[in-house]
Length: 328
Image (cartoon, rainbow, N blue to C red; front, side, top):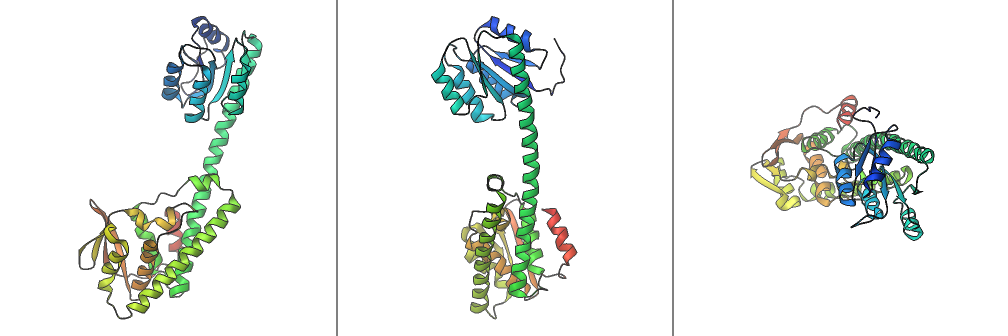
């Protein structure tokens, strides 16, 4: 029997006939490591235990208790990267066609096997599995680039919004917003960025950013209009009114956000998810404070994210903004 590296892609063959298991292993063992199971339930267990190394699943159709289609469907649902092959000595065209149409199997092989043809089928299945792995890796890399681009574009939107509302030199709320998001822990979403093509993604991002910008502008205008002379020490009370029970006041100029996602919403929620009014108020409040030379600084604690009033430092430069983008 050929010795293979521990990480070598393996073939799982499932059949209730012991002689068929031995025959398959002798015929195919030189191509790849072969795992065998004598029932659908044992096949499911081996699939779950070895999903990372199994490249191809071959299953007999007729077995006691459950048929091969059930196992192939199980693998399709839980381990879609595995190439699935159905084999049987019986003519069961209806079930085979159903499995093909539902995408459960890659190939159907009639028993008894012709060894040369079986080996060729397994070589092709292993090659298909390799191509799927490489494609998945390229897709992951593409998604990572798209994630970074989307987050960078969203940060650019934050800057543009702050500059349009408070002047191009007004970068204080941008830094405060990004520092809070980083402290809260940012986890960019994947599902919609993976499933949407690039044009749809750009379109969704544009409409989402425009809606968020309008909401921040309205909230900022309302604060300026309703509280023109209000002292900055009241900012936490204003935030408490917007966030309700999600913000716990702990003293003058200090409070605790119970959920960090309240501070990362625009940067991390999916492209088709609207941004809440409370989150728009958060950025509007940072803008209002920055115009008065103040900011809110966050630290992580056991009870949540504690924010406190602090005098704003010098505005960050474009190179510092670029450094912030690199951190996300």
